[in-house]
Image (cartoon, rainbow over all chains, first blue to last red):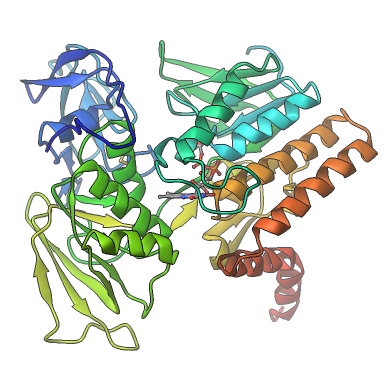
Length: 108
Length: 377
Ligand SMILES: Cc1cc2nc3c(=O)[nH]c(=O)nc-3n(C[C@H](O)[C@H](O)[C@H](O)COP(=O)(O)OP(=O)(O)OC[C@H]3O[C@@H](n4cnc5c(N)ncnc54)[C@H](O)[C@@H]3O)c2cc1C
Ligand code: FES
């Protein structure tokens, strides 16, 4: 997918261009984008997998109301990536079901 | 625990913003919280010129209305604005729990004397195989992605629903550079305004009435969709199935109020389909059954920004009354004015449904009592 460069009505203030990591891989994003939006722009739509049937999950509401976009950000699960903004250097990975919020030894 | 606010407004869309501004006219010390980095709610996504007859606001773009209200609120000495802050709970002792994400993450408790909930609405889902695949997005999500973050939601889109939201978001997708392969509508006629329908038709987007989506195709994400014609009982007609090559399926099949916090606050929840399903019970001055809790906007019933703003004013007047900040005559004049503007806005045929819903809500408690009386004991 791509970012909209030329819009008849809107100008976008994307903020600063930074690098963050998705599943260990560097991704370019902007500080005024949510993690989900930046990943979408990079062509990444699958943000996690459901708990029981391991179905792929993307965002649905993009306003923080449906929990479809939960990912693990810097080791912390259940982050609504449609509300959380990109920060330089953060590590984001797909969440598998409901991951434990209790940190175990050896977790990222 | 921080300072004691007289009023907390939860939600900074048109309803919450105008509530805070009205309360400020009476010197009410207010805190306004919103989850987003910017105020405006849905208005920040509305690039089209507004419909409706709202005094001078008709013909103005939604984003411009949002900007104007936000500026007024930001510059108002009576209003403290907390952005990137989610209200996560409202407890029996009157504590409103807030989760602030920026500039640094923290939990904050406040104990406001009154609360106006103006949390808006969320998108409805639709049942069909594959509806959970990435690429099936609510119309609000599509708008957020393209109009707030400037990211194209997809190359080729199938729009489900021909109400105003479906039509407007289709047009916005075209402006952003996507193709919209079709709009499908299960009813025999288009739901939204003809002006909006004509606009998208001029761009060559077919509006298929009496059609529905059968399934989303794809393993990891949407790679296509099957649509079909339906009979008069809305059953798909075998043999009419058609496959469309799309990467996004956009659902514009209605909104539902975000009632969680009002429910937790002890507000009675009524089921009124005409208002969007479960809605917090309220009277015409936006009071609920909890004396210091008020509601406004899409939360109180799915309608429009124009009406949401007036409901915000009414909710503020009721809070002002509760706080004892104004004389009854002063309130009466302002209320009368607000009610007459609401009435004017609700003169169109599109308001019939909302008006029927409000009527039902008025009788909701009487109906409950009557039904309870009829249950065998
Ligand atoms: C495509 C489209 C076109 C439209 N066109 C028009 C039009 O032409 N004319 C018109 O009058 N109306 C139009 N509307 C309708 C209008 O946008 C809505 O009716 C209006 O925005 C409702 O206002 P609100 O303040 O109730 O809710 P919203 O605008 O949804 O605002 C609610 C706010 O509350 C915040 N919030 C929710 N929960 C919490 C929480 N727990 N903590 C903190 N904050 C929270 C949200 O982040 C949001 O900012 C349109 C809507 C859409 C989707
Ligand atoms: S997409 Fe719904 S909560 Fe993030």
